[in-house]
Length: 136
Image (cartoon, rainbow, N blue to C red; front, side):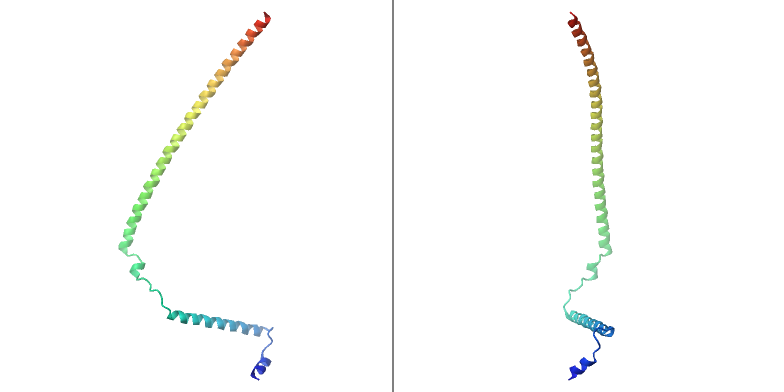
């Protein structure tokens, strides 16, 4: 009988107050679940956090790391300088070879032009000899 009386007093489910009560109920359920999970987590065993001297570096350790980093930085700088020198030397060799080949191409072009001129002169001489022989 109580349920029948409660069903008669419930508001229409399509009204704003009914929807508001649904949101309040869902929020209450979420709050209960969150608090329950926190309560359970309180009693679980936790991993102990490391002591601060193991989590953070001391001044002596920090200074040692600074020296180690400085030596590593110097090694890297020397390595980069050596690579730059090698690269520069290689580029110089390549440019010198390109210049030498360019000079050879110019010399060969000049030689080819002079040979072509000599061939042209010989061609003219042969034409003259052939024309004289044809007249005979």
